[in-house]
Image 1 (cartoon, rainbow, N blue to C red):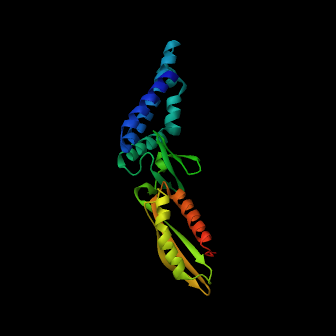
Image 2: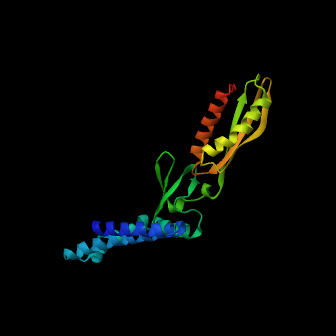
Image 3: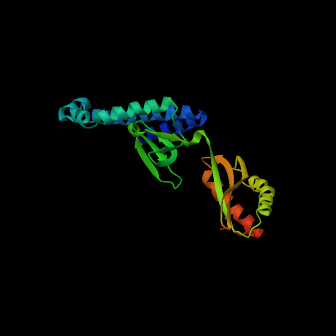
Length: 230
């Protein structure tokens, strides 16, 4: 059985590499069905090799009745939900989604569950029937805005000129940025302090890297030019 599952896994990987993402999602679900079938066939084959009637044995000990009473309803619900997910295009393999506050990449969609992995590498398994109120963050670009509070003695026009001159260079140095960074102007001011905004656009997948890179680049720019920020 192990050899059969290994060969099946290799074939699955090859086919998935040749298919588009949605086709891969559907194939993952189908492959999950097939793997369950292989395991079940192996069990019955083992019974036959021992001279036992597997179906009669299961029926005699009441396992089938027990499965129906305890888990069949949930199993059927998960399977039907998995089929709906695969064909609805609500989310697919490698999409970045939010499910009840947990955000992660869709690593797998199986016969019973969907597996997400977040940016910290943590895995979370959701029963397919629990995949509700989903926010798919991969279908749109993500905007990041950094607010910088300047000390009151900083000449605003000089800082604005510096940003307009250097921000294009920063954008070119961070290939994950789709648009920007761009100076957005003054968002707030108090007695002695001025807060300005800079924004950039990236994909959700690259959001964390873009945020860290822009923060570093802006801080170094201000530091190198003697601009005091709070």
